[in-house]
Image (cartoon, rainbow, N blue to C red):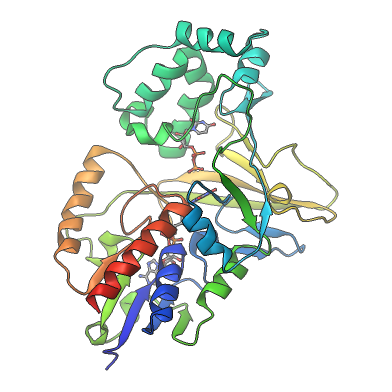
Length: 366
Ligand code: FAD
Ligand code: UDP
């Protein structure tokens, strides 16, 4: 039974891209997701007021990979969009990531590019080696900016001190001496013109793909009958938590619609490092370009418990993951791909790239 069929657990980027690749290569694919919808955490939908929102928080597509961008372009048209973020410090908003304008506004200065470089050189606390997220930030912008923009945001987001998190977390955020106030500087920055969910519908629209939502892997009988299994959910869950639970950070999303507000904030996202229990507010119209009366926003409240959203980059967590990874490496007929399955703080484009290369390896085995 099912000997020619591959079972894919999870219909996010990892699962859906692999499903498409295998289907186009002539394989039969059965893809399941325990949620009642496709698209994983990138799922978007019209809210009760007709505004396109991202149920699981703001997803902004950006990549330097032409290969990934071209691949997804088969399934969607795009709307150019460059994300901008402001950080609130002492009740005022500043461009974030920190750039020259941030310094000039915050400290009432008039620095040029060389002046900004000299400023950072003066205030930075050189660290060697750079191991933690605290090291990254102190090493580049020094203590005052660290305390104003990073320390409390990181405590809120992760429930940990920056010193307890690997360098890669804060290293996602650049420091600039120019006045570029974009959140990302990737070559390709765009949003799917008709939304992510529509793009996933197109990805999964293939006669060799059978998609079932609201189906948990735990409830699928006969796993052994499949030619191959691709797991894109949490790897510790797949193995029944036999070495213990891998910590994942969760979020609670508080969506709101403001019927009488045309625009709530001047940019897509405003970060609140030091105030409130939430980390940031995103206003979706900026991201989607939708023209409508009223506006919809989301606040993100970090949580210890709940759906797994972020792997937590710490040495001890990576050591635990390695134990699971050793089991995964010994599997002939099971492949683990994606942010939860590989326990990596992947962006969407990185998941697509990982899924494309995993597809090649799976096809060699089939
Ligand atoms: P997921 O999208 O998590 O898909 C895994 C799927 O597996 C889920 O749908 C889940 O329901 C399903 N599943 C799990 N277990 C089972 C089971 N037992 N049975 C059946 N199904 C199961 N990336 C960017 O590039 N730009 C951004 O702006 C950005 N913003 C983000 C904001 C937030 C708040 C979060 C949490 C992430 C953000 N990301 C962003 C990252 C992005 O969401 C991920 O890189 C990407 O969605 C991961 O795809 P995936 O397929 O690995 O996992
Ligand atoms: N960060 C911060 N202050 C901010 C924004 C980010 O300290 O205003 C730190 C924080 O530790 C966060 C990390 O940088 O978890 C990465 O931020 P990013 O915006 O990339 O996080 P994501 O969008 O993945 O939640």
